[in-house]
Amino acid sequence: MAEYGEWNRKGATLSDVTAEAEYGVSRAFITQGIQAGKLEYRDGAIWGNPYRRLLHSQLEAYISEVLGEAYLVRVKSAAELRKINKEISGLKRKLRALENRKVELDASLKL
Image 1 (spheres, rainbow, N blue to C red):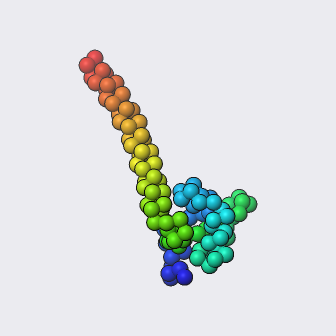
Image 2 (tube, rainbow, N blue to C red; image 1 turned 30 degrees about the horizontal axis):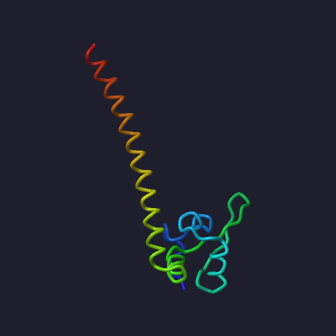
Image 3 (cartoon, one colour; image 1 turned 180 degrees about the vertical axis):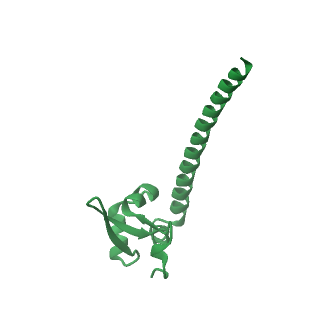
């Protein structure tokens, strides 16, 4: 099912916990996909906590098949919007810090 080397490609996999947060699906939904043969997985454990690694491409195909393409587009757009908003707030924070430093340096040069 998976392409050669897909498991090793950066960003091609995600954990079941990340899938729940990113796509809004439950572990039961993921388990149903695995039992139906639509999703491949690999077991893993971090600090003794077990998880399943899934392939992004297979998970997205399964979600669009079961929940519909519109759901997948909406969820992916919401995730991208959250990422953009986070980056914007970080840049605003850096800009404020730089502006404060500029004011300090201007004040020190006027002395």
